[in-house]
Image 1: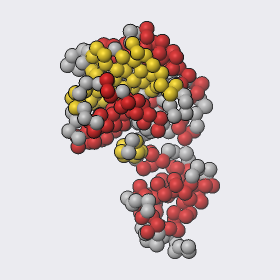
Image 2: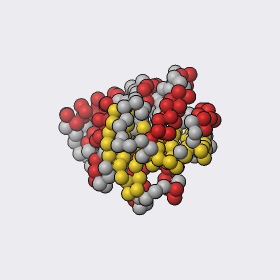
Image 3: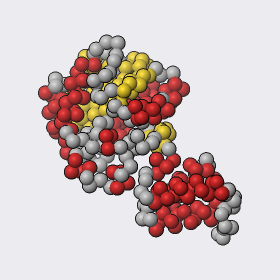
Image 4: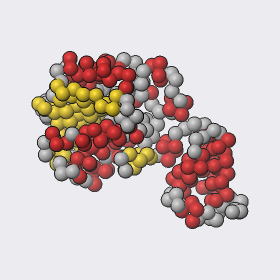
Length: 294
C-alpha cells in the first residue's frame, strides 16, 4: 500500500525500518507497541487509521521515543507500562521490569493455597512495581481467600511511588495495603511479630560476574540495586532471619533466586529453622525458586 507522507501508516513503516537498521529485535512489533502507546490507540487501530495524518507534535514525540529505543532502552520504559499476569503495571527506570519467570513465582504461591488459611496477611519484600504482591493478593482473593492486609516493602522510595500507582488495583478490589520503605526488615513495622501468613520476595540475585556481562539493554537502563547481588548468601540470610520473626507458625516463605544459588539458598533456609524446604524449577527446568515453612 502506498502511504501519503506523514500519515500513520507511512511513519509506522519508516519506524520499523529505522529500528531494523538499529538492530532492534522484532522491529515491527516494537514499532507497533511504541506507536500505540504514544498515540493512545489499540494496535489494530494503527491499521484501521493508517491514512490518518499525524500532527507535528505527535511526530516529534514518536521520534524521541524511537531514538531512545534505537539506543537500546527497554520498550516498557518508553511506554511506561508492562503487562504481568494479565494486568498492566506502571514501570519506570526506578523499578525492574517484570519478567515472565516471575509470573511463575506467583503460580508457585497460588499452587500451594490449599495449605493457607482463609484470611491472609501477605508481605512482598523488595516489591519494586508491586506486581508480585498485588498479583498474588488479587488472585488469592479470586480463589476465595480474604486478604486481611498486604505489605509492600522496598528500600527505594522511588520504587514505592511506582508501587503506589499500581496499588489502585488493590483499591478497586477493596484489599487493605500498606507501603513501607525498609532495607529488608530493618524498618518494617507490623502490629505483632509472627503475624504474616505469606512472605514473597524477588531480591536482586545476579552475581557480579553475570552482571558485568548483562545485555546493554538491561545493564544500562534497569536499576542495578534491583539486579546485582554482591553477596547473595547474605541477602537470603537476611530474608530468612526476618521471615522467621514475622511469619506465623506454619507460614510460608517464597523466594525467586539465581538458579546457580538454589542449593545454597536451601541450606540457609534449613539453617534458619525452616522446614519443608524445597527448590522449584521454572519452565526452562532451572531451579529458580526456593520455599520453606515456618
